[in-house]
Length: 154
Image 1 (cartoon, rainbow, N blue to C red):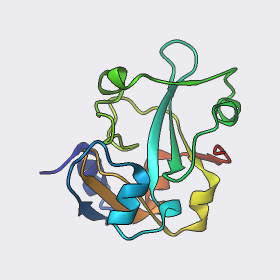
Image 2 (image 1 turned 135 degrees about the horizontal axis):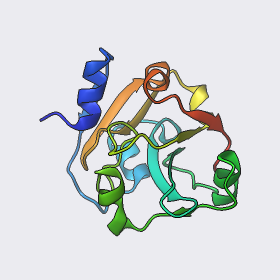
Image 3 (image 1 turned 90 degrees about the vertical axis):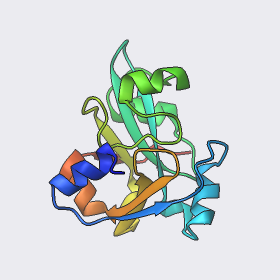
Image 4 (image 1 turned 135 degrees about the vertical axis):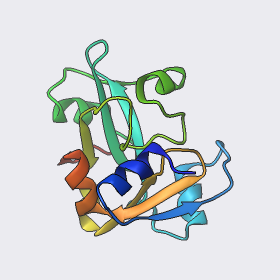
């Protein structure tokens, strides 16, 4: 079954590979990288933050790193940002925790990707549901979501 993320890639005629694994929400991003036998630095998680009330931002960081909220806020010219509660994720993005993708969210929120992604031609990210990862060329992802790149991890 196609996810919104996959439909968007298909509509742009972008090639991607899908990787399915047991959909267990207790798995960490590093666990998933290990299942994929892939370098965790190439596997990105999508984190959703809120700046001013109801101003949402997506950040992609390697699964083995943490989002630095101060760097994140600075990168989008906000005084501060905070992670949105898991319970609000579905309402804000259309995705659940563990299955959030920067592709196919309810709205096109500004996306910032950690600059370390530029070290790789291809990266992995959520395919839009728990248990599904997509591998695609970074250049193809950029062509769809027009992200900013900066150092946002600690």
